[in-house]
Image (cartoon, rainbow, N blue to C red; front, side, top):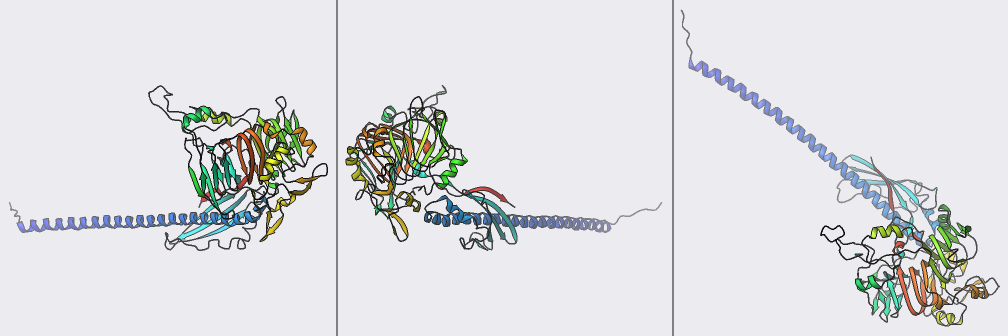
Length: 562
């Protein structure tokens, strides 16, 4: 039998060879893993960078759309003001898609932002909806690129009109404001487009605003003595038609769980009266040729009726006298236009706004058949809002003046007339369509002006052929004397009122449940004057009572990224 011999060095070489193979195999596997990891990392990094570039491209698109949206509004605002805030001026948008350079030469082309190095964006106006006068829907296409990554965004921007912010106040005057007398009480904020002077310690249960107005030489100062009520006093003394408090009630345990809850109400009276001087001007929404409001009346089928008979169907060409009673109240539904004078008094029901092409004369008490009410305190303000949303609401908007009472009486003339002309009033710029009712008396630097004298003849005649003053109606004095109440016997007006020019009247103990908005104001009272702000007039994008419109901020109707 032969013998086998094992040599140690041969075995060692074999083991070394196996270890070397395993080593190289491990290196290979690690190399593959490393290459795979690096490849994936590089790929992920590239994807992340492209994703970042894509996001920045969209960011540039958004920036371009915002730029065009804002600059179009700025350019149009200047034109809109120059055209007397006429709705027809919205035709400015119509040819922007075909020829933007004449109106918007600065439209972004290869524009850039410092926040995005190397990125550029271009914006084009691709369409304008010309099917209606107002609103205008403008389609904008933005294209942007960052490091070769190209993205586009399409937006439809609406330029429209909405109820003016002047209706956020119980009292808004487009002139110097003045509350003189301890008998004046405002249950709501008050604002002037000039200085505001308080005298005799009137009460303002709300905030006070005054504005810088170079045309009037006003610095927006608030001067004089003033007071405001505590929450407890307000809750016990304020009329039911006055706005609620904020909070509407003291904390209470309504759920029986030992936890007391508050009842906040944003538009309520907080128990304080802050002063805000030197504010920016708030533009009065001049009514122009009433074309927009005629369209609004037709679109919403606005009507005034009484005893089942339609008196105004959308638009009435001429003058009208409306006298409501308990049995036969005036009924309003939506916006309507009366191209001449509106004479009105008595009971009224429904919701809407009446636009008059000249004056609105309030001949006597004007009261809702079903008025709103705000309990004080109130532990369920939302439920109260829901109830009040269906209560009566009247807007009165006059292209001329709003005049209260029988202006033919000597006591009206002697007490009110001095405040209807300079030096109490001043000349001011008017809208060119005011020429039809006599207010364009001269031009300065190409702009039409009224000299401020409402006691002068306006160039028109009354029904009996006699000359007509600005504050007078188109009816004869003899007729006015048969239908108008003595001003001191007029105690209440339920309405949100607006006039392009003068709000005037002689009153005794008097309450307005709504608001007073005017260019000039001559309310001469004996007794007391109370303004209970109807907070439903503050437009919040929901219920619309068709109050006078102002230019709204542009709103994006449609937005799509590609």
